[in-house]
Image (cartoon, rainbow, N blue to C red; front, side):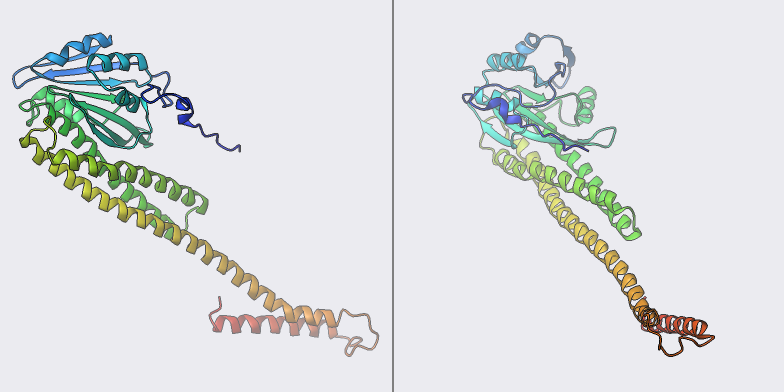
Length: 356
């Protein structure tokens, strides 16, 4: 089996000037999908747009608008939306850089936030996807690498006017989007907890060691991805909570404070699971060592039993004429009897000492 070839994402950006908009992901063939939710407390318009120019007019509407873009490989479309909404070139560069660390940047006309959205797909594969948000006066722009996200419950709340989302501004919409991502982290850590418990059971039940080793390594990678997503998020929410920006209203600060509490709780859980996984690795190594000790014990007992038998066979296997009992009629059977009695006596002794 050949060694897996790993690609270097940042090779595409080497030598380019800051602010160069270069897509660093792997979904080069992803179709551009644009959806919008334009609403107030009384009305809502949900649309899917074929052209990027169709969402330009939402910048000046008095209603709240959420515009969601899927397909970061469409750099030209992102450049157009950046020009229309007056986004900084460094912001556009960070949007299409799919391996960026979660961060928050504040500009005169918007707030830019990068988060990691984590979820399990239909095949139970762990997915980590970067999501970028632009918060303006009356709009929120979100950028995703591909279709599929954790925002469907929020979409339903907007459609059916459930909760506060239709009565508050774009800052609350941003909170609702971030809260949907953070809430899904709970599903992730609950799944991790179940996987850890299953691995513990498998270790005690003696399942395939090679398979368990691979599962532990996969769990370690998943926990590290969650940890990388969660720890920077504390700083982001802390800045939003302190209400240092004019884009965040005082009534929304309390909601961000609640998200911050959730993040602290998830961070503590991740630290616990990280220690548990290291404990699983130690348990796995101890299991391997114990099995090796059992094998060595059996081999040692077998060797110890055959040492005196080999000694007797070696003595009477020598080619000397004057060996006592050599010409005795029943010497062969007597020798076999002595060896069998010696074998049984040693087995009894080892059993009595509880060596096996």
